[in-house]
Length: 222
Image (cartoon, rainbow, N blue to C red; front, side):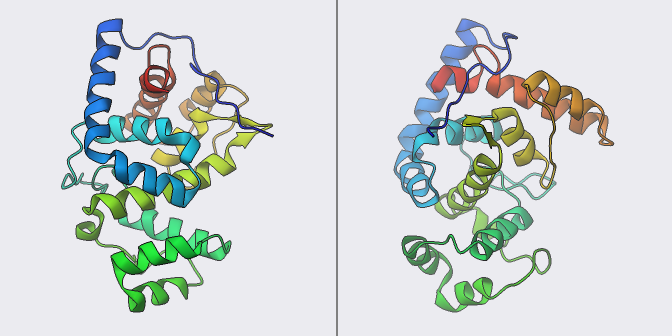
């Protein structure tokens, strides 16, 4: 069954036409800089049909494409992925025996055979963290690991052949969260009920609207 992505996922208009035009201009600038590695990492991780999703996340997380940008949370680089999320994503993929020969070649080039073999022997998630902030400043490794995690979220939150974009976004922001709801509006209501900080709830809801709303990032570039 082919996956369907329904855009917008909410009817609320979040950007004016002028703002959407500026988003498209900025995304095209990101494509000029990063499209070669986006296409490569999308192919490696099974996201070739989801480059619009990759660029939506990239724009929302780091519209300037600053590979050296690090938040206080440890979120790093062009996709603002943390060392612990990057580590767990790779371990989970290996546990499912889904790392391809092409990915092994890529990871060997980035990490070296000794470190990669040590990583692939890991049997559990968590500490010690496998990646450093400095390693995640490498745009290609950063993008690959973020795409690896996104591919897991796409698999998890494709329901009855429909990609639940609001759940993918919530998963990307709130690792290990398991959002509930049959519509984006219901997922937003679920977020509002969580025992999270007000800032976290506001960020998550604003992110869903910015990416998935009418004239939002995904609606503009998909």
